[in-house]
Image (cartoon, rainbow, N blue to C red; front, side):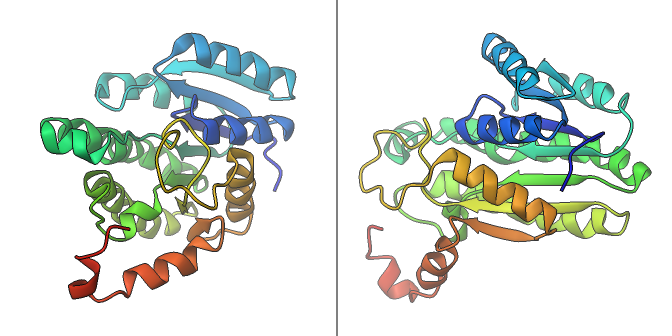
Length: 248
């Protein structure tokens, strides 16, 4: 799929997966709006993307916990012609034991991983409907497929976001748009560094490649790497009386 004359808003653009996707889009000549909280990092990434072939690359502030940062991004995007696309890589995952000790942290996790991104996409959706085109890539997690003792707060936030994306897909499809829900397994990112029990860890670039393939093929839901679909199929079907005694 060519990205020429298309605008991509990338939320959480300083993450490893987002950076890998931005670089791939840049090589295809996309116009990029890189959004996050670390403006110095975003500015450097924007320059890197322009050097790789991006038609344009801008750095803009986005904070999932500050809705006043959402409007300027949408306003900037609608100035561009053609399709407006958005990829969401936003989320936060404190250790579950830390959350258990301080439940007030739940608000931030849900805001970062669900409420903030959903609010932004709801602001952007009318613009996509008006143009009759555009793609949303929502990055969730296999953690949202079933609540596990090790990260059930994060998992519940991602589960909620996946349900939101399903409804948004239903809505935008009617207007010519599309929504891809992405469920990565373990990926080599800052969020997973130092976590015990990691296996079958994918590179951010491999995930970005899978995402763009899914966009081109208009897939609805993908697991990346692909084998996580089968791993989670097994996990979802473990009877509850057994599962509640497990520590996976």
